Length: 284
Image (cartoon, rainbow, N blue to C red; front, side):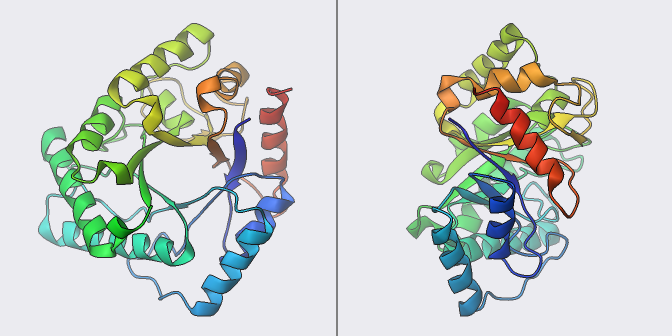
């Protein structure tokens, strides 16, 4: 069955994310390894790394992904922004190598008016630079390009764009894709009926290849299909609806994939518990 989990806070220490995912009964985890709203982060201390790895071991070495900072824009054509983005992303890749995290999720970026072709060219070059400068080429680290809703000049809302990046990189074995259900729905890919779902997966297979899809974000959508607006909703309470998630979770091609929630939650994590219960009900 899919390895269902959630994005969890690292407040109080990175290792505490494992206590939170255990509390909700998760089998996979996504975190921020540093403040996602800041360019620079403090170097990891040996004790932080030790505690994180110990707690991870205690929780069965479940799949863990880091989500890179929202400030990073690898599609930037302005030299200063591109330099800062490559540096910040390189730091994130290095932190994940220290912690032993194998997946790093990142949005491809926004071309800012320079055009899709120029933006994609910048992303491909900057991904390679970050891998080279972080030492990631000597590791098994995989960068997961996340599908996007297509707001503004954001790249990655069309499967063809992600497929182009996978083919253009000099280091394709270090690249994969993270599919966000809310984002692809908002970008115009239907999921709700079996026929619509199959058509979307066929397009993914054609443009990317299902073997390159390594992680999922499970979020319903507050907005309609093709709205190009990224607003997450609880499972079954948005415009995708229950059947869209049933189609995905029962697809044998993704039976062993990590799938994490990014839905709103309170301090007691009750929403995560309920969303995971709903998802697991499709598998019984």
